[in-house]
Image (cartoon, rainbow, N blue to C red; front, side, top):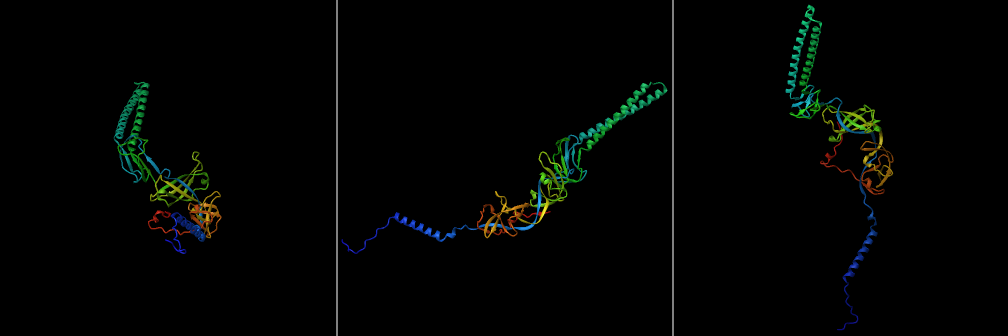
Length: 390
């Protein structure tokens, strides 16, 4: 069939490969246009940080001690038997309060009583022998006076009399020792205190080398801690201090420095410091590890920042300031450090905002957004109790 010359020809359909290439080119062009039109969208979003102001406050220089809480010298006694024997009964347990002279434990008294009876029998025998010797001496002297006995007989009788009287004195000492051992078969409290430890049970054999009961006075304890010579030079008797233990973290007990050793232990290279703390309620435990804090100086109205604001680096300590919405690191010179705050001697001024969280990962010039501290829910408030002082 013939067609007219002016009739249009039908268009051929494009292949799938050509169509895909065209779509990809359009997507690339569209993406390029978006990058040009929205160049400002590539700016980094501000980093949320926690901040705190530089403020003026008093800050103390402290010497921190770590040691053990121990009873005062002479206020901790370990009691054991004077003689070997078998423990008949223990009358107290740990934590019991005891008074002076109170019986705490007893040995089996049967062999001790037998020893007393035997010693008393020997004493009676010795006294009888001494009486007989005294009678013979008296008769020998009368016979010598009458001229019917020689001087040698008198001397022999006198020697026997002296020997018999010496034997009596020896027997009396044996009796006294046996009675003392019987009496010391009872372990008695030397003073008013608390039973710190019971180291043996009824029925066990014991000897003078074995402790049975320990009695201590814990109303006043001493923190005994080794101190480096440089820090020991800052301490003196009478300085105010505070003591805390891991068992009651955050609770400070008032204390006072009582002594600082004038010599350094050649083994440890440290001097011994003693800090006395009152413990009327028995809250602190003897032999527990504790920390002491001694205030040795105070700087008034110093510039201070939270310790978390101080960042280290090759150039020394510094802080990250919030300057016109951006982080800016500045070098600082620090002073006293009380564990929570740090004195800043140069580099910042009062009321400047310093970053206290996230400063290590923020380069200079990074946009930042100060964030208010989150309000803790009731279940979170118990996680970090505030410090209190008894």
